[in-house]
Length: 324
Image 1 (cartoon, helix red, strand yellow):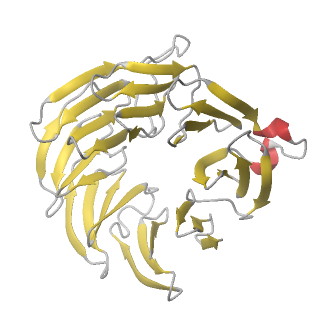
Image 2: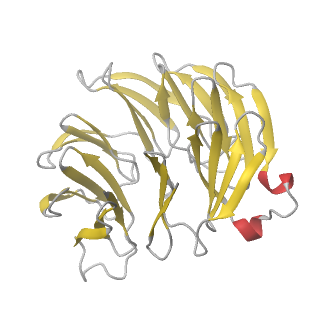
Image 3: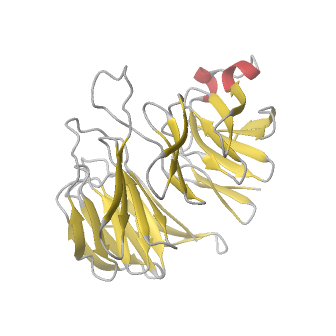
């Protein structure tokens, strides 16, 4: 089943096998009809956990679509949702970190961090080390935290550079990825590999993007929205190859294909999606374009996901698209 939402805040459960809509739910009704709703979804057991840009957090039954609980925390949520066992982890717009009970939405812990003086729509990010029960989160003011979920103590805190030419305290980052006791992310100033034990920098390169990196056993793949692609050595951060998507082929123009929206690693290929509905298949070894196609004329509403050798995406006409 695919769970997705539209700009009005309606949430859908669509069955791929039955090729039909199972249920539709809208928490907002007419009260917020003039406000675009930005939602995050997270599946956990038989629950669908939802956060939004109005400060609501609520839970639906996956099979029924019925509302289990709903809480208003007052401040818009900006981060992804992470869940470990019975706890939800989330950050609000003011960089306040919460741990919340999954069964009823009640607060377990709230942690005040450094707020950003400029309110932006940039997302903040959370990642988990479930083995050591550590939580890592990066705020919009450029503070990277490591918190132990058992003791509730701070392991370490690191300040990430905003960049000397930023001219303000405006900060953004890509989603952060935890792998092999390392933390990977790109910020408004650079891309980093961080030691998860102490917060020290393993390596950094002067490349900035808000797009989620691909981290494999040997490589780190990065892309900027304006078409620049990099393959880095996992251990050292050394650039193995770099390509400009719009300069590889004269027929490929940003105005035509749009900006890069996401990266996925599929076997020996990198799948790049663009804002105007294009898929590019790129050889991970050298950055060569193997193939490309326009998968949706209306463009993508969601980033594609890969499940069981099929690619799923939602286009701007709110159609579920499935590709081999």
